[in-house]
Image (cartoon, rainbow, N blue to C red; front, top):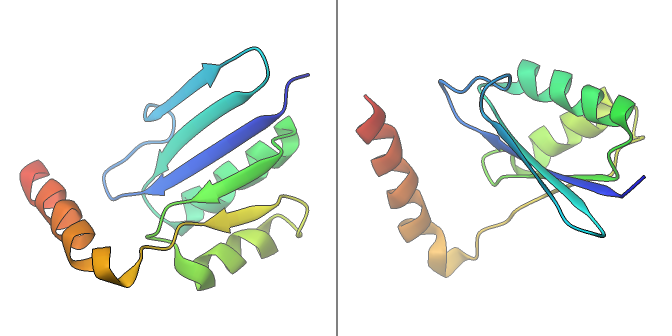
Length: 105
């Protein structure tokens, strides 16, 4: 079985049953999933654990506190990391996501 790396994005209006993708190379499986909230994030993380996912990377919207909630929800059995935006990039990154959310409405 190939090792699997997952990336999770939290954004309102997403549906993890629909908003997901999988890419497989000779050596690695990469999956990504979008979740609308922490409840869905915890459910998805536990499903990943059951499937044998090797590591979960969280988007910056989670931050450390929510990453720790995911770690706790999986009993510490699924390695979890999260993205951090460099301070000099925070304004530009935030503007992109504000624009993306405004575009949707």
